Length: 330
Image (cartoon, rainbow, N blue to C red; front, top):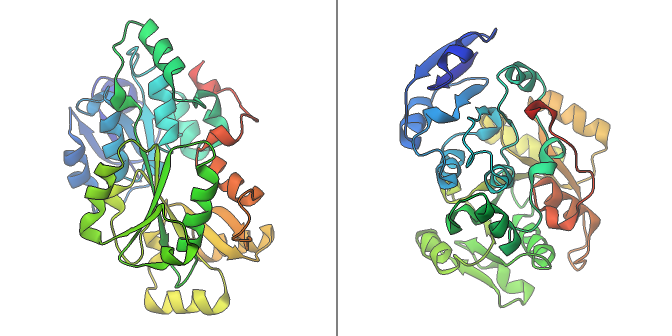
């Protein structure tokens, strides 16, 4: 069943031919919506952006993406120039928000055919730099540095020793070619063994301070360790090493684990699974695999698989290929 949160477009959304279990109308803060849906199961949320207080501030959307699983949200944009500006749309894509449209008729299509990055790549600006700011200012907007939001990517092992520390190191080694990036691990000191002084270790109470100290970085990679600090991240990937022993141990420890991971970015790490094996894994676990990462050489700082994972995560400075139009806007 689905939920609708509406305001300006209440009448239009009321005419959708979909099953609705809950319907809210009005203007809500991020905290309001988080409270309403924290323990409420739904298939899709159709969110009229005007129902969100202070929605023209991209930081509001960023806070929403921390509070609610945005892979389950279809965002109906309004016609305001700011929301439809290149900067705003690019930031949606940067946060992994792909299902947005101005066309109410496209909502039903998106429910059954959710967008991938390829579908919205044309909105993603490869260089969030002064040229973009100048274009933004030419539309009679004041330059707003808050629109250039920092990406904090959390990496968490779901099966034991699934490789979060090594993957964080490899991601940093690749990302630093094109972005200002930092990497930190929480409550451990495994980074010490990479002999890289730029890698840092903090305890869980120090993470906010670390993020504040590195606010000038475009990207921060966080090896979560055993902590549940997803609220500090703009995006998360969850690592599973798909060996028989690891999976059986995982299920015995928590038989609801894959239900809890629904809608999240699952990366099969150190995987030897073929595409057919991955399909079997998805069917048996009832989950969706975001990326199937094979064993990689941790000394290789120009690895195709690592780059492809970064592109899938929206780090498009690595590639400007395969741009596509986003037809539901037309």
